[in-house]
Length: 208
Image (cartoon, rainbow, N blue to C red):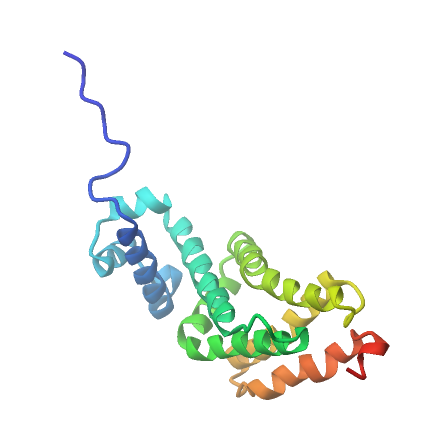
């Protein structure tokens, strides 16, 4: 008699289970840190089992990377929700900057803890965080800037302008996280839109 075939996936696998794991992991990591959080705690919080976590994420490391991706995807979705399609490129840039900082402020305890953790977890996790930030957030900004170039408003290298603007915004966030300096969102947005971007504008576009 042939041996019964094993199921390709554990019983009870659903997208809802996966999302519960990610949501619970983000909360646990934010409260206790990577080292202080066990997969057992996450499984209990997510109302599932450790084998289910291994099925979806392979390891604690894999789960942590997925929580970072999920967090940054939420960041990106918040920016998309704030955007108005018919706005001018400069107004879309202003909206991007404001939404980026506003989302950080709305989720500050979780994001601040995760960022502190990432800086201490080595090159692999830092690299993953950087790649995901580029895919989920920087790419959106690059599209906004490219729209301005296509309309003849901006000059220069869009890729490097994206890096510079992300650097300005991120430094305001890092000052808040590591130095406890109040994040003045309007001032941060103004640094990008009213100062840095003026140097990108085509001279004939300055009068528009």
